[in-house]
Image (cartoon, rainbow, N blue to C red; front, side, top):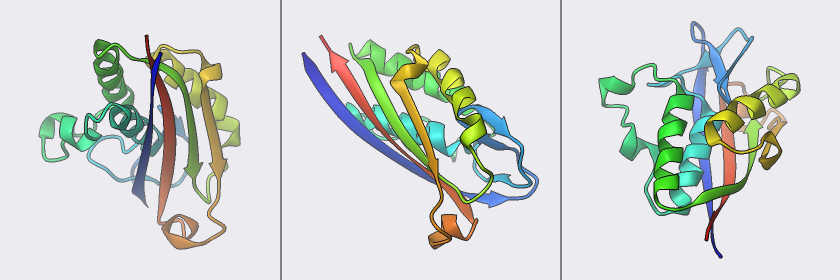
Length: 159
């Protein structure tokens, strides 16, 4: 059996007037993430991990912010396209481990909903998806609540 590991990272600025979307779920908060699409940093990090595992570039190659076609795009739909590409290459997802870095809002109550939404698109069990949330202890841009970041690692299997 062949295996591949990929990692992904994303960060977006917090601004007023935008919804906060993480893992495909709208989270009640006074600020949202600024981006060309819905700016879902968790889903973007997972997409980059999937693409990186197969040396297929990053999400900017497939969904460039310069293309108006992707303005306001639902990141779960973009993830679906990435999953289709991964499967077309003969790979399946073993598991995904991820972490969201945000001072606020508290994300623990929303983690299971994120896992459920992502598992539907990834076509894997929610038990194969780990999402953790942490703060940055008020350090750096996430600690100053200027943005939210996410990291993801994926294991792909072929055979």
